[in-house]
Length: 269
Image (cartoon, rainbow, N blue to C red; front, side, top):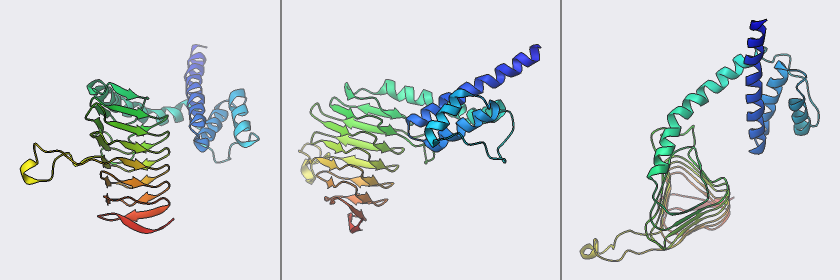
């Protein structure tokens, strides 16, 4: 009797985990992942009302699980499924907290989705829209690098629109002209965005002179490849694509593919 109770408890807990994870996938628009989890729940509990209702809402009708479905106990399948994420969280979460504590920017508005640590520094203002993400697990240096956002003067400002995703080791730095990123942008790993030269270019004034600045404006739904540098005074139009490794030193229109050093338009989309 005691053994049956233990088995029931060990199975029921993964069911709750699966239902919770599936609901989170639905909220994030990951329908395929949610449907898989709901079907796994029905494998273990064919009469689970919550999973049946969710599948009905997702696909219009509850379909039977495929004949080739994995019939191992759900708690064993989910134990393996959740073991690695748990270890990954133990490795990454302390690093995320560390850089959060080290961040010194008092003008941060909005909460980033920090998959990789993000350091926010400087006396200026950083304004993040909803679901702005930093880091990507399946790219290089996810566990060793960090993203860097600096507004180095009180009037410096960086604005990022909703649902923008920055890959690992991204860097944005404003000295005052400002950086604006439109919503739904995708940025590869190791990108750098500056609104300043940071130093006077004249040899005799390099440490004491005045640097040149210019605002950076990146439109909505722009896709920027890995290793791209976007320099001061540049505008990139909506929907455009910037090829990996490019240096963008002059403006790029909307709806094109551009690349190279310096980046030039290759073709229309």
